[in-house]
Structure formats: structure tokens, C-alpha cells
Image 1 (tube, one colour):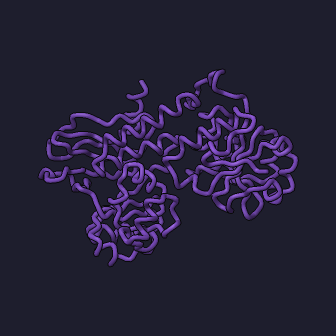
Image 2 (cartoon, one colour; image 1 turned 30 degrees about the horizontal axis):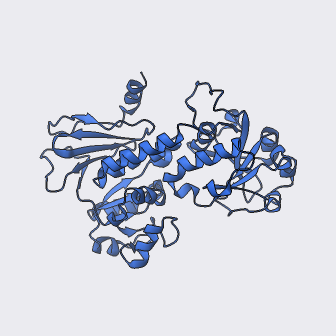
Image 3 (cartoon, rainbow, N blue to C red; image 1 turned 120 degrees about the vertical axis):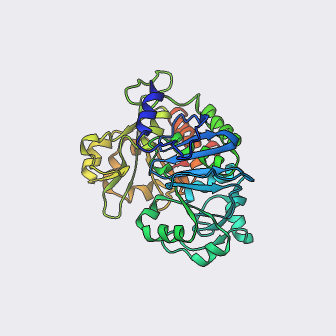
Length: 377
């Protein structure tokens, strides 16, 4: 069954052998995430395994780690506070868990994160900026009493920084949520941070709430599963941006954005599997003529504003390339643009799916109900 196959896939990195003889008594059920696991042990202990091969043993406040733990397991002692937060897309999960106060140091500049509570904490001095991921101020990190750094995958480009932090006694947890192929898989990482902050129950409730809100719009995006007539709108949606060199940057068909469009009832284009580059990136560049041939008949366009800024008018959009004027969605006025914060707000992915569903099903969606996309005038 699906659960068994998922466990088989996890077998290469999910290792519950602590080395001290303790056996797990349960596992946190994950419905969408594929890049971490949480096993439970007597006494409120938890083992977190992450797909990069790292393992963390979370020890409850007032308790001690057992003797004889395997050398590859890093102990995280609760309460977890004064976190050095570097992964900007994770801040919203801490905000939802009412755990911003667990962050003491930041690798994110003030106002470079869309979360109000985080920016307020930085302004008040409750969170101190300690430099970007590749060049942290180690003195500030140490003075804060930080024992845990939550990094994005960018830290893999600066392995010497990760090693220096570890040598200074700071545990480094590299968030892998961006490697999840489904939007809800990214969101399910809230369960991991719920364990770290001692808010497992709230994390479960928040995730289930998102699932429930999507029940009336989503269809299964799993491979080989047919769309239900009730949910699939028979509309195609192109999601892209134009690079500085004039090519179209598109998502690969297996990417989570393409799957969000499927969940909302649309069909992502271009389905360019035969042109996919053999790498792990979720996006690819297409020459404009090739993109035009595959996407000109798309019923809707969502322009990804993350790189070159938000657009408000159709003229701004058409200035990106002369070929765009001949797209069906342009002629029919079905061109939308993302807000710049979309990819920094993991908790908003459910709202984005709802936005796309409204775009596909309502002739003139109420702008007040839209969260992350707006129609170009």
C-alpha cells in the first residue's frame, strides 16, 4: 500500500536505531511530506530524521538524553529558544505556531520577510540581525546563547559556515521543505517545527485546518489519478516569468506549483517533460519561440513576479516580450500576476490554491478575497 511504499522510500535515510536500545512507540503520520519523519519514544522524546541524512533527538525540558546515543544523532534539548533563523520561508510556520519568541537571532534583514510579528520583534530588539547565511557574525550568534540554527539549503553552498557553527556548539538543521514536490508537503513541515517548539498539537490542528479548507477545491494530483469532472475546469494555466535574457522560466510538470494548479482544478502548461534538463532544479528556461509554441493557447497566465517585481498593468506585461501579445489569455484578458511574498509564506500555499480555483471558476473574482494573485488591467 501507499504507506508501505513511502516507508520503503524513506528506508535510505529514516533510521530509528538510536544505538542505546530504546525502541519507538509511535510515528507522526505524514500525508504529503516526503523529506522528514518523526518517531516517538517513551517519556516525550522524539527522533527527527531528515532526507539529507541528519538525525535529531529532541529531549523534553527537565529530562536527559540516554547514554549510548549513536554518534550521528544530534541532541536538541527543550525548551528551544534563541534560534538563529536563516530560512525565510519557515518564519511563517513559527508565526502560525505563535513561536516567534523562540527566535533570537536572524540571518534575514528587517522587512525582507513578510511576517509582521517577526519584523516587530526585530524592531524591538527581541531578534538581532547576525548577518546573512554565508557570512554570519559568529560573535553575535554566540552571545545570544543560540544552540540551534535553522538554515535553508543555501548553506550547502557555504559548507565552511555550517562547519564553523557546529564547531562553536551550534546545532545546524537544514530545512528541506523546498524539496517537497507538493505544496501541502511543504506546509506539513509545520509538524517538525511543532515538535521542536513543543507545540505538536497546534501544528497538527493547523495542518488539518488547511486540508479541510482545500477539500472543496482540490483534486488528487497523484500520478495516474483522473481528475473528477466536478473539480477539473478544463482550463490550462501557464506559470512563468521572462528572464533578463528574454527566455521564459517555467516550472517543470512535476514541480509543486504545477501540482497546485492541478489541485485548484486547472491543467499546467507547458507539459514539457521531453525537454526537461537532467537536474534537480524545479524550473527550466525555454527559448521564447519554443515557449510560445507550447503555451500560446493557455486559457490563463499567471506571471511569476518574484524575480523582477510585481506588475499591475497589461502594458508592463507585454513589454516583457513582443510574442506575448498573441497569447490567447492576453486576448481574453485572463492574465494574472503573483504577489512578491508568495514563496516566503509557506502557510499561504492553501490560499494560493484557492486563489487559482477562484480565477478558474469565477468570471470576476472579488479582489478582496484574493491573497496572492491579482488580475492585470
